[in-house]
Image (cartoon, rainbow, N blue to C red):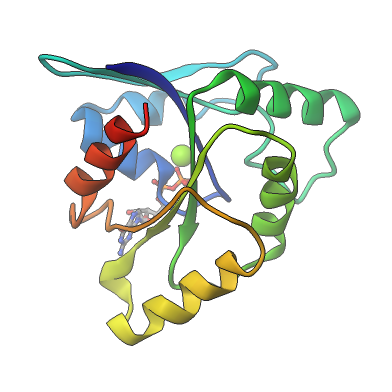
Length: 166
Ligand code: GDP
Ligand code: MG
């Protein structure tokens, strides 16, 4: 199986950390350059029988700045072109404006979206369910997957779920 996957989320939620863990090299860090208008490949995970190609979404990581129509179109095009979207949030923070901004863009695409709750190592397990509910009342997700990109908890499970949905 193979597929294109876009990881979106506010700054500092752990996108690069996740990619570095999954790909095992410092590839993701290298792509943290000023936004361009073209999609960038952040990393490729190749196993015996599968290939996952992670794609950056230009413009979307700077929700504080108002996006022009052009950037919104670019981001939306990326979402339409990939096979799966990982919407990553920091489980230790509530639903914020940056999240809402991204979720509004995701509403209009048919590509399946996983809600990835990252940094579960930083919270008490009791806080997990309320967090999930907060996002779920806003939007429907194909899967909701709690992980710790830093410590690796549940990352393998996330990869399996990605493959199942390709
Ligand atoms: P990005 O801006 O979304 O690419 O976020 P980064 O990957 O650069 O991570 C931002 C900060 O959060 C860094 O200091 C990471 O070490 C930290 N971080 C990322 N994932 C986790 C996690 O699962 N747990 C904890 N405790 N910290 C994390
Ligand atoms: Mg990053």
